[in-house]
Image (tube, rainbow, N blue to C red; front, side):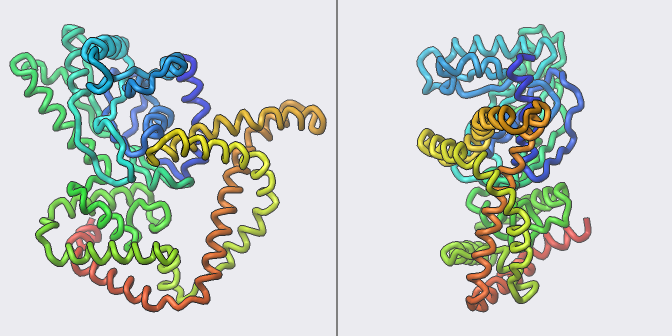
Length: 447
């Protein structure tokens, strides 16, 4: 294990506990070594490899796009266990360069370590709950390594699904689910007779396994229908519009099962469901235009009024900590925000860059502040170190305070508004969902 990788694995544990309000694992590996190729989904760009590698135990090497291997970054990427993968658009010498990388992959697997490969190969610009078209690279690397090792070692493949509430929402939840293992050695006879057939079969099997670890809506045009229904019925993974009294694992199962129910329907031919889909799209566009939120409408429908007492208590109680958070975190946050949005044209990269680079910049920003405080005021190194380590909590509190203030002001404004027509639309939509998706809800109640 290289030093930087070791340090990242240790020190990123703390930031991830602040980024995510809850982290859950399903069938997580308990061993550091395993000679396994982990094939993962890729919903959140730079965040995905860090989340899986840091939060789970196995030591892995990442397959990473070659275009990020700039001269200044190469030593850092090498020390972080990253290996470049070259695509056709990267140049004429793609094949020979990849052959050299595949030899390194063989050595990684030979000595009991593991690889992480993102089977989709790219991240959507808008976060959606489905698996994108799958590639054969993982199976090719696995079989190629077995051939190079004369089939003398056992090499495994395993699907790992990362399920975020929303990777762009600070304080959301995440569940990482691991499939059963596939032993590639079991395909030796098939591979020696027909290598393409073996690669295709393993790729298809691992694709199905990965679909089973996440919410996978087969028809891309219907992904927001799934999200809208889950938000109104409060049974899914949304970071805000869900029933948090339901355990995270159960909500993950609910989300997956509803996607499976949808995949079994002839959606585009179902006139009633198609009409409901259009009405849901229109409803959520409308409340967005009116600057409403589903959680406020849900509260109104349940209690007939919007209460601001809990928000007011939070604002009062947490206000003494906000100034600390602003001093220690606002300047570096603004710097990182501007850097990310200026440097990356695709918005999908912004949140992961802000989160990960933000912690580094904030840590560096606070070092001289704590040094001066210790030198002139505290004069105790251990106490100063303890304060330095808990400072990120104040930053998290400040961010939450700002979010609570926004909620408070919005609720005060909505208390004077007549939302009866919107509530009526919402009630009719929920009634339609109950009727048209009755089979799913009956199946869920029986499980």
